[in-house]
Length: 156
Image (cartoon, rainbow, N blue to C red; front, top):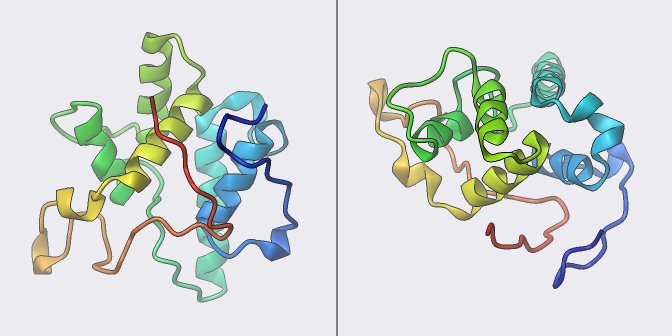
């Protein structure tokens, strides 16, 4: 169902996608096609495969996602979920736990958190680590860039 104020988007061919956020837009549009049973562990595995394919082909996208407890999204999430230290179980497990406690589908909570992450100044929230880089970041601009340039709705 289309949310009020949002234009109905259509599925894109994989060759039209330019980054992980374009791919995640497709997952949001048709989750049953991409994520078996709405499991964030399956989504995390798909994103791992995406990153592996980029690496094999020598492409450095500077993604906000890493598997497990690393990367800009995970670093932001630990603070957002009021966790004192990173979870060894990873972002997918912790979002699924939080969703179960909230009585909300995990995939829905993931996209709400993703929208919040993208709207935040998440680079400024990361603390400098060794070498002056933000923890989990490669030092580059890790901001939201959507291949479709679609406006995001407010998380509410």
